[in-house]
Image (cartoon, rainbow, N blue to C red; front, side):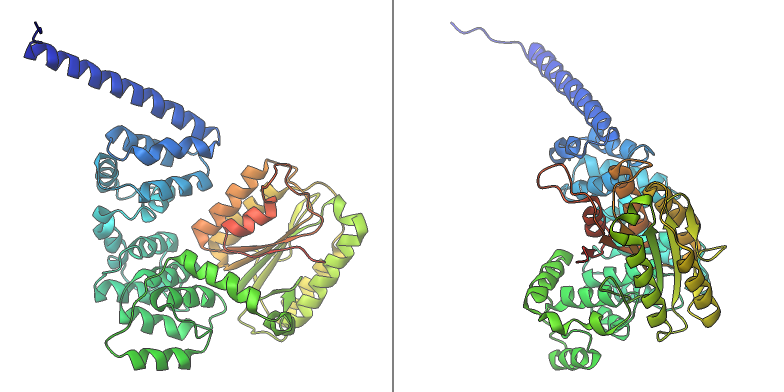
Amino acid sequence: MHSVVPCWMMVVLATAFSLHAADEMTVGLKSLVKGVRGGNQEALAPLKGLHAHKQAGDAVLALVGDRRVGIGMKLRLAEIVADWPAGEGRKTLADWLAKHPACDDDALMFFSGIHLLEARTFFWNLLAQVKGPLSAVKEPERLALAARALGAFQDNPDVVVSRVAALLDPSNAHVMRACAAEALGGMRSPLALQALLPHLNDDAIGDAVHASLFQLTGQDFANDPDKWKTWIADQGANIPWKMLARSDYAEFLKLQKLLKPLDDDPAMAMASFYGLEIRSKGALFILDVSGSMNIDDRIGKLKAQMSNLLTALQNKSKKLRYGILTFGANVDSCFSARGMAVNDEKNHKQAVQFVDRIQAGGGTPMCEAFSHALTRTLPEGNIDTIFFLSDGQPSDGTPLAVLDLAQRIHTQFKTRIHCISIGEETSKVPGELSLLNQIANACGGTFTVPP
């Protein structure tokens, strides 16, 4: 004979089980948050399967708003949440954003990267409400993030595509132009193609434009606007959209590099620094002049490279702006005030004298150097490229702290960071890239080890 469990008891048991599961999730999320705050990126892994729970959304918001959590961790967090399907987790995030439209930059960065459909109108309003010329905007980073967010939606109407395209104007801040160039690569619209083409050979955003054209079409006509125009005209109204991922372009470049003859490298015939072409409208050179740079006369070779570069820059546009920042015993800037100067004869002489005075000495304060650039040079500098040279590990912080500062620069100002390694120690962790290699990979740059 089977006993029958009363309905009321089944309800009690179900409630008890639900409360136990909720308690377990609460404990698990507390452990996750603690691990992330401690710098353990692997602690984020359980979040991938918690999209259906409000508590997970609350935990994500706590991490995004926590100043102890680095920008690299927040970017990884955004990648995970971007893959969440619809559920209570994403709803919790959408509700929070609706109540906090004036959220800080870290929160805005996070929301711009999670492809949240409910936030589409919010980001459009950020772009649409601007009055007056875009070049006079006081917070260009927020408009840039709005463009980035809208780039996740292929079906943007023409009015949105046109507004994002307006950010490409050369008079606008670099961060807006760079984010717009990338965002248009996600918009399935002939207007996006037409807006990108005039900027194909732009020294600051040309690479991003080329990447977006490849994303949209799967075609590669290099930096030849006429070939692009001919191809687009031939397609008429039947453009065969490909809508590729940005990573597909990166893989394409790797293949092209393997197939490209070494003597066909255009950088060899242009102004270059340790073989890296100076293709920029605003370039900042951050140079390690610590005591270890005396080994094998690394400091002498660095000064020779800079002297040759400064000579070559005399043949480049006077509109080019550049700055030189050294770090060793102190962090010193070649140019006072904002640290950047136009490429004219007066500033050339000042830069030559600054390089001549360089002497190796002191430690390797990478954190101080990047912090100086982040807080004193970049906000008003309109810098699109940083060339970072070093021969060692940081003396004023952990490698993770240095990487986080570099990622913040790249994320906040859309500045690519090329890294030149001179005698840098390899990582002690098998299979792990060196610090400078990690910085270049994370910040859209190239990693170079001179012979």
